[in-house]
Image 1 (cartoon, rainbow, N blue to C red):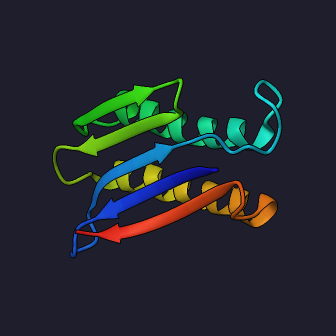
Image 2 (cartoon, rainbow, N blue to C red):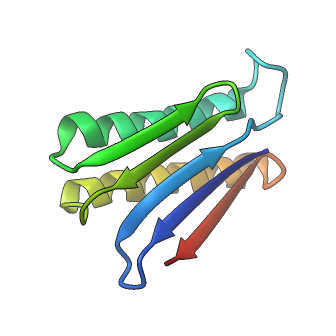
Length: 109
């Protein structure tokens, strides 16, 4: 199962996203759920980096399926829209394939 944790401040500002694990929908190389999750998360991080002026710090480990993105400052409007869009896509994956393969966790710090 893939677990994605979205961490926001008490005032609702995005602070960090963390993604761990593999979906386990199918064997490696054929797992469309894992692929969908990866595309949504990695494209969002790449878009934050290339298309906005937001400062981000990214850590990843391909073997364990871990990727973490921390936001140094308050995200601008474009950054917020990108993350909101990613979450919408991830919620669609959960709706289509179930919580057995993707768990979304929202935390407040």
